[in-house]
Image 1: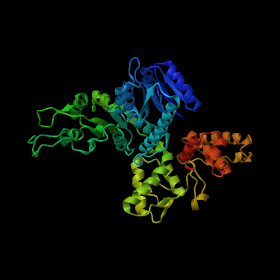
Image 2 (image 1 turned 45 degrees about the horizontal axis):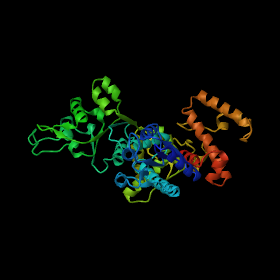
Image 3 (image 1 turned 30 degrees about the vertical axis):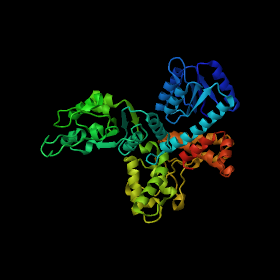
Image 4 (image 1 turned 120 degrees about the vertical axis):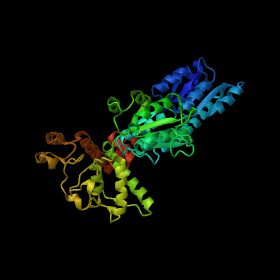
Length: 500
């Protein structure tokens, strides 16, 4: 459980609350000043509830409340104040305080109030979790969890963000999520693709034009910067922006002003810019086709999206999601996918990333003849050869189950298949022979030059541990976790990662 933070320059108040909450099995952390709280937050501190005095040396409790709410709007804050300080109490509520606690306070009432705040905090965590795992962004892989955490940290910021990653990784979805969870969420989200608009029209698209500015400009037109005012402007494929327009963009980012094409009056705009590219902007700078000062202006916070081949454990969940989505669009029942076909998808490198997987799922929804998708139904680019790979704990089923597995991507053959000599060792996991068999097996795979060996063997080892433990407990996760010596959240996460 996250701690309850107590902020008061009076040591006796801190001591009394610490002892009372400790008797209720509630963890606490105390601070004498608001500045200490800010430093703790900067170092990754994360309170469950904050209880603060209103009058302290330096930064007051109300100032602390304002700054905390700007960064953590869902955090319950209890303000302690004197009976006579009614104006401060009103100000505390207006600032978003959960409750105020008058001094001198009844200790039991204070504990009950803090308990209610803890319950409120749990509800806020559930809401935040739902927002973080909104349908538009899916993924349990550690790389995607890092992206989700970054979006969460940036949610209350207006800072410029540069999203990088290969084509099809979902850069626009991340930009929309950043907007959706920002203070500008009530404003517009405007997107423009630099590579999709002719160079001679791009300036007008971005900044608008006055009537008569050029041939065909019969009326005044607002550009994307005006349309996105008080909201977010997403500049996709920023690496393809003509260099002559980069100077104008730099000016807007610097002072928030621009001129329409053919205009003489400076226009002010209040826009958060999020840019994205699949190109190496540092290399574009070296080549002289991208301004270095613009690069540094955009590169305040960089968010890299992983390629799908770097998060293969997400492919099963994404596949089922896209099959459901396609079925909804087509007005048909969603198709199922066999474990064998799913194993082939998991072994494919997906040069087009998530967008390619979504297109394949739509193709399958239309073209696969049966309700259950088999390897033979997969499109030609998957290159099914009739031999089923074993990927991420997915075992072959059906007619393909008898085929000998071969190394493919993450696929690794069983010990005895790769090294018959190892079959003479005892197969009982409690005996030391399995270590010798593993040593021989790893040596052979290293000689073969098998790819991604660490991850593939680790996945098989963890799959074996979890499968045997769950079988012995008849599927009871808590009991299996206890036997393995791991936590409940760990076993749940591992089962999701391994597709169990």
